[in-house]
Image (tube, rainbow, N blue to C red; front, side):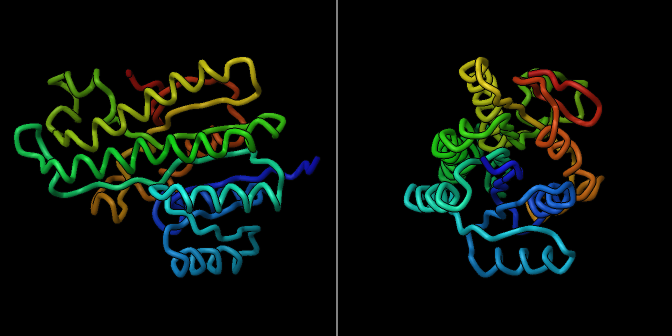
Amino acid sequence: MNEQRIALVTGANKGIGFEIARQLAQAGVIVILGAREKERGNAAVKALKAEGLSVQQCEIDITQEDSIAAATSTIKTEFGKLDILVNNAGIFDPTDGPPGKAAIDAVRQVMETNFIATLAVTQAMLPLLRAAAKARIVNVSSSLGSLTLNGDPTSTYYSSQFIGYNASKAALNMLTVQLSEELKDTGITVNSISPGFVKTDLTGYGTITPAEGAELPVQYALGETESGLFVESGGRTPW
């Protein structure tokens, strides 16, 4: 078996995903940079290859079953396994909001992308992850997905009411909990990681850089052995 670690990072052509791809490659991992748009994916790969990193592009729209199947087939043919899956791809819709005002179409699309599509990718990649010695699944979540913090008036997240986005990350956390239990007798760990308040195209503002936000997801992708956790830079996040 190929001992070189192979990683797929979805939504990796920019922002946190791009930095996760970069840091994994810097650690010696062969990174498959997943991007919905081929041109943007190629541009990201070109930038990382210019740094001498081992990265290749994979066109994958996580909301399309055919696209997921094609990406899975490509990885299976070329590598026969997958050591690391970073479910990073996600969206935010500005017409999302409090339950009484959020646009239903926005909520539906956010849930479809951030949770259901991520579940579809994970299911497709599981046979390849099982083929690796000790695989890692990292779900890039958010503290906004914490039911505890959403219900705590003293929390800095209490006033951030986006029913679609917050619910999608809470659902993603449920995937982490249940999949970790399902895979407890394998060498695969599954964790939800909140990268922090990162300034990206998704948010438009934040307190840390994408490179800083990528550090914790990369840490759990490379070596942490615990599973079924929800963590951020300050420690464990309450479910």
